[in-house]
Image 1: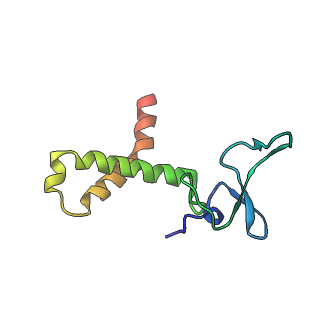
Image 2: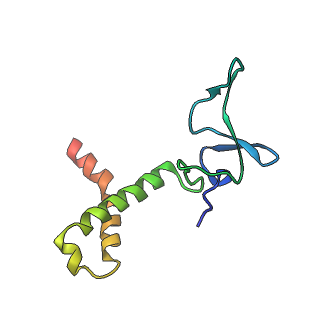
Length: 106
């Protein structure tokens, strides 16, 4: 599993000496100085971390799969479902989602 530190975050840009800039939010004005991106160390971390090793689309698909799994678990079907089957069904629903949208638009 990827360590959730700045150096592994999609939003972080390395500068030098294990210090970089967080590009998640717009630059902040510090007094009368020019705007600047928030500086962080490579080992820092925050609650808005996004895995740099996957694309935003893959991250969206993972979130959609989680949401489908939670929804399935709230049904009676889940009580009789073999272990692991909920995630397989949720993943197939998440994978089918873009196709469903295309069909609805036609």
